[in-house]
Length: 203
View 1 (cartoon, rainbow, N blue to C red):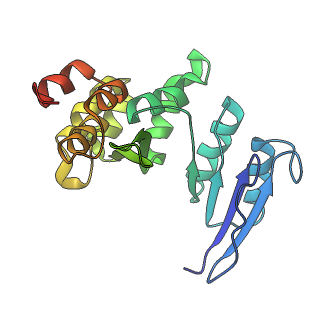
View 2 (cartoon, one colour):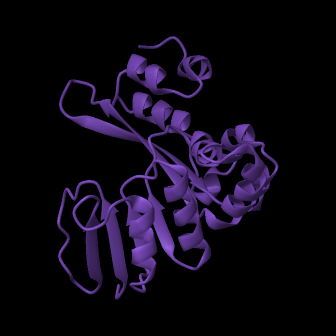
């Protein structure tokens, strides 16, 4: 599509050529001093999409939320596993007196959270990605606002027809398909005891 995409990376690992859209890549330390300043500069370049290599601190997360609230599609990465933990990590970056406001902002600015875990392929040839997919809807937005993110997992589980999937559901599928080892799935699971029961006694 004809879009202007601005990426902020530390470091740039792959250079993207222009096709229909325009890709502007910025590297921390070379083009900009840090992620928050990079986002501020990016907003002056009339971007349609902003990609952040990592949202590692309060200033970066805050700037990303502002960018999203002003109509930009923002992609960012965090070192977390699972949708609820990702939301919690963003909220916990802020002092306690700001967290209620941040929960309200995230409940309307988040579009989706996709969590990925890489596991050894059964047989030892390469890796397999297991995913969790959370798509924002009124129920999940309400849980974030009410500080009940621990209930997000069950909401995802009952929303598969909407395209959502928990990490443990995907791990179960991968074991059943013979793509990964049972123990690797249990080690990566969010609720290993529950997954073990669902897997039964088979190898």
